[in-house]
Length: 279
Figure 1 (cartoon, rainbow, N blue to C red):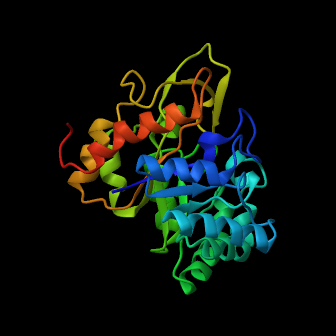
Figure 2 (cartoon, rainbow, N blue to C red):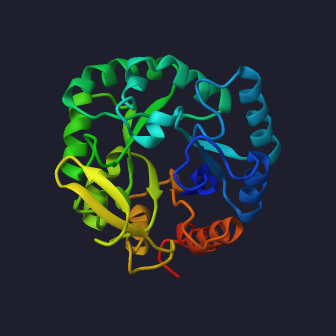
């Protein structure tokens, strides 16, 4: 497995369009801590960014030897708002951006069954360029549960349309997200994303699922088993022979410092990802 850091960690609270630190600073810190790649979002560069800006970001990545694990090409995709499904209706700019950054995985969203034929056409276009589309488990989409995910993957029917396992979002949808559930999804995995959460009725953080409506959650430190214990899930990834990206998708929460959060995640995850059994 390869460890990736989502640039989400440096986005200010409730803002998805900017970083709190320069991207080159964030990228250099990530490389020094042992991350092999970064998951890109529109807070750094988007389908609307001028070509010069895209080239400058690519130069930073190349100079540091960092790969791009996945590209989330616009704000609606990150926010999962009503416009999030527009990407599969006009996938070309998202493929262009991903290629320009040297990535292979393009994040997309699907909200209803009406999105399925658009996903097929987008996947076909991506396949012509050797790229894959990835839909993560996410509230408000056709990937809220493992069963939903498998059914949608079957309906799309394209080998380069794959899934990113995201247990935090599954928890927020009251969906099963343990080792057996991950094992069922394993043949279709293109990415694994982890943010550590626990159910918390008093929290202002809300995931609004299709099945259960508003669900309140709180973020906890990434190594806290009182949230989601990631250790048995990593063991499952080893068991099934997964060798793809494992992405730290955790935002900063109140009281955390960026450097400390990045270091905690790397120190906690890297030994476990490189071993067949938990330390």
